[in-house]
Length: 131
Image 1 (cartoon, rainbow, N blue to C red):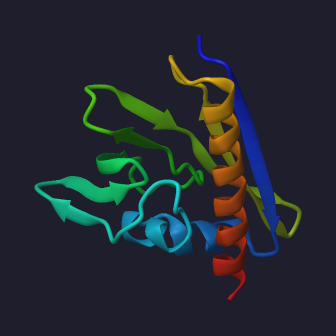
Image 2: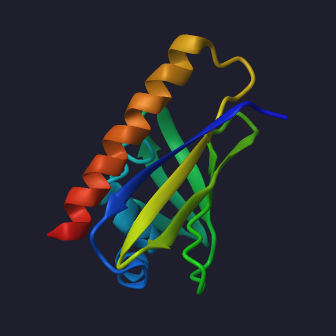
């Protein structure tokens, strides 16, 4: 079992509308700099991008009625990293939650850096979502 932390941000937008605006993989680079630093491209059913530490391949949960936007990132080291991401109802608005799993070999500094990055990306998502 991996240690984990879940981070969230409240966004004043109907959760279903928000989900519909952001679920597509090609939208992620507009707010998720921790995932992709370039446009994502679909090649033979795989999403490819330049990540913070090099080329990555990403698999995404298909569109669904539940606000689930999980994705699995393969950095080319032979192991996928699961990133749970949810958009849920919060009153008239929404809550976006992302869980960071501390990977084997990830020291305290790396985990803290990941935490800062996630929170920065969630703030960027909020700005993107309310425009």
